[in-house]
Length: 269
Length: 191
Image (cartoon, rainbow over all chains, first blue to last red; front, side, top):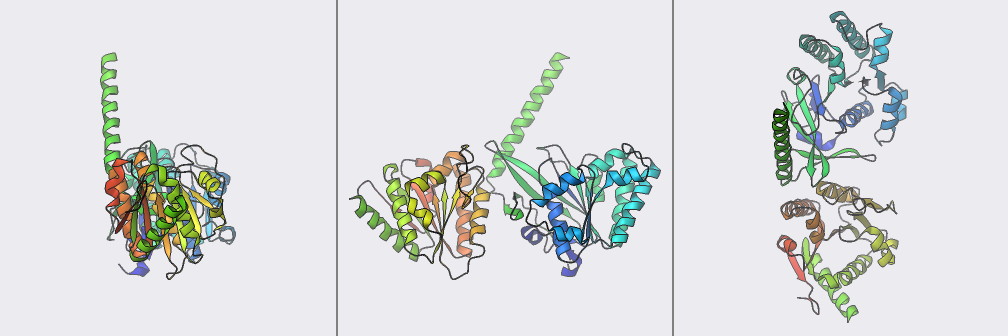
């Protein structure tokens, strides 16, 4: 693909795995359990864009603004002047919902439509090229049916793609599972999936990253060990292959334990 | 006698590392300290070289207390793989502490980060002390893979690698064979 049509992630090794970056205008699902590095990856992507004159917006639903800002300030990629100049915009979606008079817990079809319009308006007005929703799981929780979720993500993705805006949606999944989303719809609407996981190596949890899907783009499906450091943000290194044995063993043990639990439940019943 | 062994070792290491990309050193447990002394003395001999010393057998604090002069040498960087997992307080910001010796990928990342800004023509060296200690915390298969990855990375960035194996730790012996050159230190002589 033409380099101009790719959007650098700000993580050198990840760009290399995708021949340069995300296809511009695509919607990528960044999925993983709590603490897997989803928000850090998204923030690094956002600040990298801002440094390259691509304005971005981060919509948070799960974390209050002051907490999110405090956490990100510790990373070397964070630059206050990019926030102050409006190149990086961090917006609490719950506050917007309240101002719109929407029920913050459950959205009707009309509410979802209004929210979609406001997201598009903000992206349009700020002329953003990078957009993040953290998390789509929390947003979908407020949408009452699978149809509403499908419709919302699809319309959001289409509108942003027309603006050449590359979107990351974070998705929360339980730990130690190979599942991409809570509602099992999000991954089908997305153009790409980046799966952040953990492997257990002798009791230590090692963060991992894998590019599972990237429509229209050749990419590696190698599993990487992921390191997060304040100085360098996210770093990747191919996971040592012998680790698979460890994680396979853990999965087998977990699955055996689940079976024992199930059989125990049957006995109790 | 000890000084003679250390001098002999320094010569052997110097000769081997100049010709080969990777050198494996097998040492009996009771000569391990002599080997470290020889290595640190060798590292101190040229201020233009850059060394990274990865320790998994002694904590950085222990090395610092045993070989105080090492600390004064700014061309040696340390990576301590065991202090944090043993709950030992971190004493120095000059040393990079790895959370656990099982995080082998992170060790490779930290080594490469240390050498990142260094010019190509500067001689670069890494010492892994020791593979035997890493085998205590990991399966020997994954340590073998770690050595293979590290050697290949080192070759492509022109970094010389010295790996240490303790003679009494049988599991780690086969790991030595992956090196270009093997130096064996016995109780009384070097072969």
